[in-house]
Length: 524
Image (cartoon, rainbow, N blue to C red):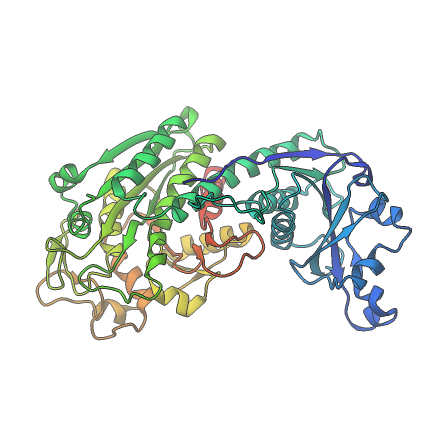
């Protein structure tokens, strides 16, 4: 089951008070200290720029009325007000932006989350306009992009599997208009086009992650990615279980051999026009379509969320579709190893020694550390094919969540490239924090019988996230700059919707990967 991936998004330069829409969104700031305490309830709100004509239509009483309805201006808070004919739209929705920034528009991520919150809250209103605060100068691309992305992602809804109509379930917003000074500006139109492309990729990622695992096993997942990639004009190579065994992909074969649904490796290739800038980028994403832990089986509690263990591959596959549409001047290849980690009489076992694609032999100590096995093969293949930069992303370790929480990814690898990942993540609202790869962690992964063990048995869960990075480093050649991005927390949101995140798959880190590829295309 998939959700609709299109929401009509356009720019308008009509007076917001005169827009023929079902609802109009404005921004409000909270006030603190003496400024907010001087005039009671009304003084706790400050109208953000962009909604001046709306405020004028209410004879200056808009913030006072919103405050009486409970609005505080807190980030993401949405308060609705019937206009009763004061403006063309029948409904005004005020979304909180937090305290007013000094001398600038709100940060792009603040705008992105606010737009997402507002569009989600306005489900049932087909046509919505956003009169959000954007900078007055000509270079407002980051803020406009943020508003557009937030609106498109906040309105996402997975179609689901319910067989009966839900009378109380309101349909998502289908058309979004963004008020700007000049709707015909070429730069602004380009930002809207880009936002639509990238948001569609994020929405597709969410669809794949949210799909029931009995409907998205390795062969069907590979077919879905390959079909979408061919339609986008990408080069496609799919290795089935026989080709994987013949090619020496021991890690992927081992993890997948416990399931009746055999493993796959999908390679996607984007070739820029005129050869690009001469650089090559490789993207690798973990595609475990369901992870029981195998013989080292997981606890039953929460295991259903392991349908999301393919979030890295979903993000990489969808990011390649966006790259095909945006056409950056750099060559990009993607590697998506897919397997289902199941316990059975044919499962790989603790104690097994597996020969990987690059010839290294790995002693298996825990079959629930399967992600690094399939990724090691895929990363070794990427290096063998030739690349300058390698970005790998995966829902690899619970240690990432313990260390950095549900919003911030961990990044390990070449220090300079990790810094580049952090900058790109901050730019798009998908933060990542660099983590070390200590020598003592590698020492603890020495094996008596093989080149390396899967995990550090002596440290158990200590430094769990770092163990994953240390292991993966073994499959990257010395001449390749690389970064491992652990998204175990950020890729799946199990709580209530917030900002532009809905419950379920988030689509992280599609936007970061696209940003990194565009940065390398522009700057090498």
